[in-house]
Amino acid sequence: MINKNKSFFEAFTLIELLVVVAIIGMLASVILVSLGNARAKARDARRLSDAHQVRSGLDLYQINAGGYPDLSKWVIGNEIKCNSTDIMAVPKDPGVGTDYVYTSKGTGFSSGSCSGDMVYNGYSFQFVLEKDSDLGPAGTYCLQNTTGITQGACP
Image (cartoon, rainbow, N blue to C red):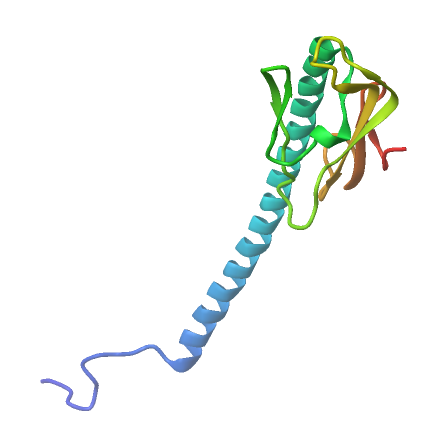
């Protein structure tokens, strides 16, 4: 005997659907927060990589030119050269509205081996980390030829 009062298809109740939507919403918000932290850490990893590449490039420039380049050569996206030798590309900070700060330091003199360009006996390279890293807490860091990477703004 067939019961004609019972519906052939059963559906979810409104409460069950709202609970599922709420759970999905909470999971999505947790994932988005995690991605935000991962993106900030990725930008910081890029900044640290750029700092090490800048240090290597500036050391190479110093070997070729006898000093470090003038501030006028530090144009984002341009290639720093000594004569016709490409030394390094000037990096751009991966953040929004932030830039690396390069400064020529010390005494300036004319380079005999780099087409008479002005070179200096020191430099500073300042960058900002968004998250804590192996270097220390988030904040401003300074790379100099004499001290390496230190916490705080460049003097």
